[in-house]
Amino acid sequence: MKTDIQSREDIYLLVKAFYVKLMKDELLSHFFEDFSNPELLETHLQTLVNFWDNILFYSGGYRKNAMEPHLKLQQTKPFNSNHFKRWLSIFNSTVDELFEGEIAHAAKTRALSIATVMEIKIKNLNK
Image 1: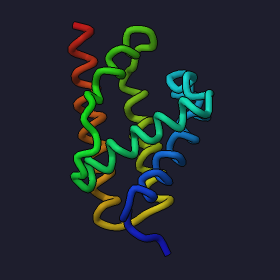
Image 2 (image 1 turned 90 degrees about the horizontal axis):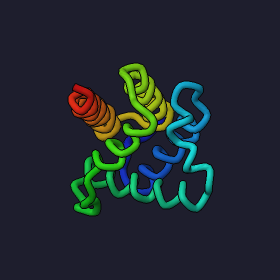
Image 3 (image 1 turned 45 degrees about the vertical axis):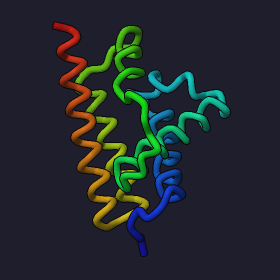
């Protein structure tokens, strides 16, 4: 039986499983080539744990600008709507495979908000 997301350890499990899928995905893997180095990947996963811990549990452990690295990446590897849709689909399926409950649902809702805002900001850059 699946449980809800309850801790930083659960968030780590989620983001690690999510990134394994992203790095193998035909449409998205090129965005994650820098994380083929295990040390860089682990550092990034810890940043993501801090981000999601703050989003889901209001921990205050993430104080960076999440948009900044994505806006920089957009300059060399442009995003399009299909990328955002696939990212969200993989995120949601990963949550559903591992967890169920109120916090899991909140994670998927917040991911939709994040992807939507990011896509809008990136589209506005290109105008």
